[in-house]
Amino acid sequence: MVNPVHSNAPGDDPERPEERTGPVESGKSEEKPEPGIYESRRGKPAPESSDNSETGKPKKKKMSFWKELPILIGVALVLVFLIQQFLARVYVIPSGSMEQTLHGCTGCNGDRILVEKVTYYFTDPQPGDVVVFKGPEPWVQNEFSTERSDNAFVRFFEQLGSVIGLAPPDEKDFVKRVVATPGQRVRGDADGKVYVNDKPLNEPYVYWEGGQPNERQAFAEVTVPPGDLWVMGDNRNNSSDSRFQGGGGLADTPNYAGVVPIDNVIGKAQIIVLPPGRWGGITDPDPQALGAPGWQQGIPVGGGLLLAYPVLWGGRRIGRTVKVRLTKGSDRK
Image 1 (tube, rainbow, N blue to C red):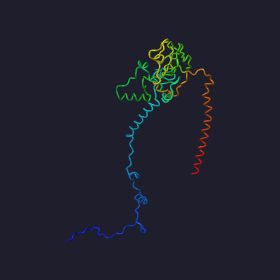
Image 2: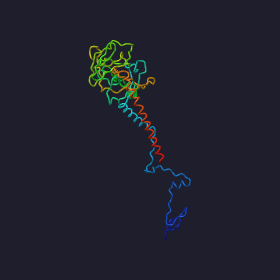
Image 3: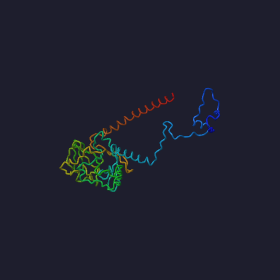
Image 4: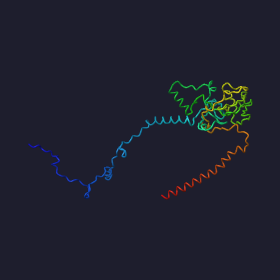
C-alpha cells in the first residue's frame, strides 16, 4: 500500500519561473529595493518606525507637565536657597529707625530692600554703608522674635514669605548705617552732632522725627574695638542703635556693648525693590569725607568722563575691525 503524497510536497511542484519586474543582467543577482524606498516610489508613504533608527531603541515619551512640575519646583527652591545664602536677599523694613532713607513707619507700606552679600566677600563695611546684620547678644536679649504658627503647613508658608520678602525674615536682624570702623573714636553731643576722631560728620541722610534733636543725643566717646562697627539709625530720635543697646545711652559712660561684630554683617542694602513708587538705589555717602574742596570731590567724576571717551572710541574701532574681517571671511567662502 502506498501512502498518499500531499499535493504540496516540494517534489511534486513544477519549477516556477521567478517573477521579475525588469531585465536582469547576466552574472548579477537581483537586489530587492528597501521597503521604505519601494513604497515611496509607488506614491505610498513609508511606514514610520517606533524605533530609533540609530540606536535601535524605542523613542522615549515626553514627560507630562504634571510630572515635570514637582521637579521644576524643587530646582527653583534649590536655586532660591543658593541665591539667598550666597548672593542676595530681600528684606522687609519693619520699623521707622531708618526714616526717611528707608520707610518702615507705623501705618505706611514698609520698604522691601535688596541686600547683596558679594561686596563684603572682598572688603569690610565702610562709613556710610547701610548694612543688615544679625543682632549680637546685647541687642537681641530684650527683642521679641517673630511669632510663628504652631501649624507646620502654615509655618512653611510663613518661612517662604520671609524668603521672598513678603514677611520679616527674622526680628533679630537689624538694618543700620555704619558710622565708625575699628580703631576710630566716636562720640555725640547734645545738639545731635556726631564726631569721629574729633571731626564732625557730614550726614545729609539724618532725619529728626519731631523736627529737632532730643536730650538723648549725647553719648560718651567710644573707641571702636578691632573687628567691630559703630552703627546708628538715620532717624536719630527713634533708633535703638549702638548708643543704647546693651544698657548704654549714658552721656558719661562709654557703651562698648552696643558695637556690632563685622562677622555679624549679612550684606549691604543696595536697592529699594518695593513698593514700586519707592524703587531706587540707597544712598551711602561717606560721612567722614569732609575737608576736601569741591574741585577735589569732582576728580573721580571728571576722571571717569576723561576715561570714558577713549574707551568708547577704542571699543568702536575694535568693533569695526572685527566686522570688516568677518565680512571678508564670508566673501572668501
